[in-house]
Amino acid sequence: MPNGEDVRLKVDHAKSKKVEGTLYMMSERKGWMPEHRDIFTLSFDYCDIKYKHLHASTTDRSQKTSVLQIPTNLNNLKHEMTNWHINTELSLNSSLAHKIVKDLTPGGALMHGTTSQTLSRNLN
Image (tube, rainbow, N blue to C red):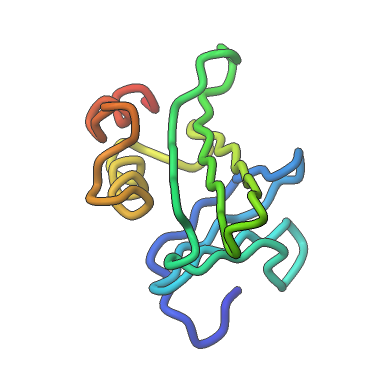
């Protein structure tokens, strides 16, 4: 748990590289913490994130998931991609999905012309 930071949104059941954990969205950064740990293993300042994409996955019919991809270009020489797979049946509802989209995308709009209302419908 982040000490002394304002946690705006906490998303449980967020997987990164097949490890389940919790995604925290604070006022100045995002951080991911694996289960049974008390430190962030992934952390990004909002100002360092150059592009964000959030979409619903339809490949697994037994679990509704969304994938948050955050490529970062921190020094114009290195390009990294971080994916979080979020099990929406365990952790999200329509209003939280809308809030995540609004917080994580520039101006509240998704890339490739998808609206936040469309994403919310896909996640339910």
